[in-house]
Each structure stands twice: as structure tokens, then as C-alpha cells.
Image 1 (tube, one colour):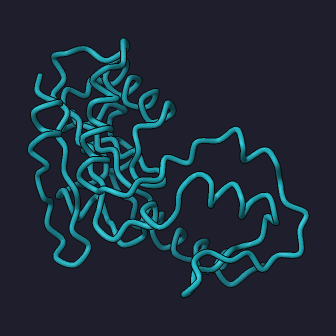
Image 2 (image 1 turned 180 degrees about the vertical axis):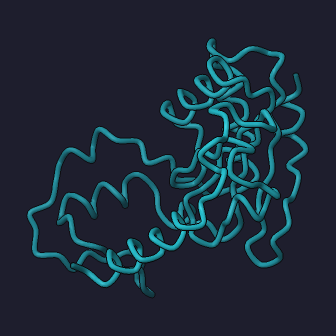
Length: 192
């Protein structure tokens, strides 16, 4: 058993012993909102937004992007579980700003091992083989933080599955200060 697996199982054992009445929480989120944000380990959505178990849906992926799957989750969140407001929250110093689709595809074509970034950019140190399947994937990297928030709010708003009555708020999280920073153009695009 790996050290990480042991630590997680030990932490879960402690958590479950103090679970209390959390097993009685209702399925729909009690505060009726959802957050789409990045998987970055420096972001704790519960602390960032003052959440407790059962309060809100939190959807996370690389970059907090409005991928088809993220929109699918948001649609289920409102249609079946009653959320009425959504937040799109990207963040400063995001790793998604360090590459583009061509770089990622090139790295994956060489090997499936972890790459590193240095003075020369991204380097693959794997022995291969890689995968050509990456040529079919859009990794949704971006160079402009605020523009990415605007694009994602607009993409969600354009979905024919999303009712216009749901406000979609656009922010980025500053990883140096812990503050949410409003993106005015995204807020305008997401207005109900």
C-alpha cells in the first residue's frame, strides 16, 4: 500500500467517526448555487466561498473551463437539483497558461510520462511510446486570464440547455491574496 493511500484511508477513518448528522443532508444543495472552478490544489472552494457540506455544487476541472462536461454538470445541477445561480471562477498563476494544445499534443506523442518545464520550455523525459489520440482533444489552455473567464461565461450562456434566468458570475481567484476578483465583462455576459 502506498504512503498516500494509507494517509487518505486514515484521514477518512477519522472523518467518518465524526460524521454526525451529515448523513442526513438533502441531495439538492441548500444554498442553491454552483461553482465551476479549477482543480488547482491551492484553491479550497469551501473556504473561498464559505461553504459547508450540503451548501453548493462544486465542479472542478483543469482551468475551471466550461467544457461540455462542465456544462452537463451545471445543467443537471439546475434541472434536477434546483441551483439558481452559478459562479465561474478561474485563478491567477494558472498552469493552463503555460502551454497550448500543440505543446500538449507534442508532449503526449513522445511519451505518457510526466513532463517538466525549464528554461527551454516543456520537456518530455519519457522513453515512450506516446499516444496519437491527443490530436483529438482540446485541452482548453489560455493565455489571458480575464478573457478566459469571459469566454467561459459566454459559452455557458450560449448553451441551448441553459435558461436565461440563471445569473452566471465571472471571477478569478487571486492565489496570492485569497480574494475573488470580479471580471466586469464576464458579469455583464452572465447577467440573467
